Image 1 (cartoon, rainbow, N blue to C red):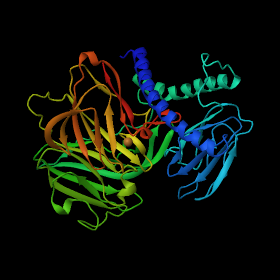
Image 2 (cartoon, rainbow, N blue to C red):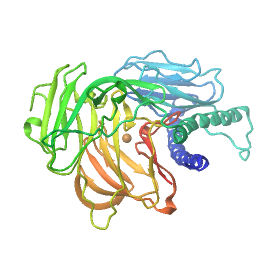
Image 3 (cartoon, protein in one colour):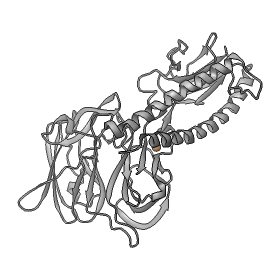
Image 4 (cartoon, helix red, strand yellow):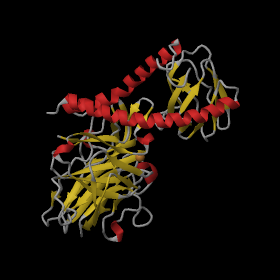
Length: 456
Ligand SMILES: [Cu+2]
């Protein structure tokens, strides 16, 4: 097994790196706030609420000051200081309110919008009441508010440590949520050699992160138990030249259609309702048949109400054969799919899970892993791997002349395949995350599109 101590140490290094970025961002906000404070008489700050952000993300307010809050969005929002009674009223679009911080202890507070779902969507931030930066011995201040601020900062760090420890604990205790996506589903081989998959779409409970269970629109094996319905759906794999039969049954509360994204197939099998077929009504079955003509890194997903059906979970990986590896590069020992999502009930996730429920990618020194990124979300995600080079070998399943990078932009619909070969001197836990930092971290620590590559 793994040395837990080394794990914790390495993950703290990760936290420190994130922390440095955060301090830089905080310093910028501070200068903005200073301007605002000057304009409003020196004791207050202003916050703007939109979908789905609190701007600025860090508010520095003098003790007993006020925060002017405006709803500049298009739906109802509010602003609440966690664990206090300080908050605005529910603000309609265009409305404003002020929070009087009179009597509030100097310190650090988490702020958020309490409208259900808005905090998770990104409406959270920090508020510092009192001095903006803790005074040090050297600066000559030993006032009570500075001491309180340091204590409060320690509490904040403890809060941020928790998801990391929860993630680490999975190495000993196993996954911290129910359900794992991308489970290989072997086909039934028919007498003529056709490979048949029987897949159903159904709404089931899906645990995105510990304790956070949503109603996912999942794929699973037809006739399977609810536990076999996952996000992403079952991982399907065939060989080049195979005849494929995909028998789909719709148990969703809405019509749908299954599109094989990236697959070369007959027009009538393309799965786009009103373009190549009628919608598959709830309770009905549709049979897709095609021959897999070349190697492919493909996805199967809904193409009907896709704006919600796909991010809600109607997505899966469909591999054909293997990507040819250019001369001089090692053949991968395994393929690790990493399916990105950012919307619907599933939200900011890797393989249907939000940190700390994401699973690490394990690699031995000298071993080559192929990571396939699939973007099933609505936004671009720059996927950054710390410390170890990623060598791009295919785009959308098509081989490309290999090139190296550490951050790979993955746009919606794209699939990128990279090889990762850690060296012996790269042993450790390497963070791997989307570098849109609000997709990876929020006021209470890391979440969402974060995992690690563990070289051991
Ligand atoms: Cu992202």
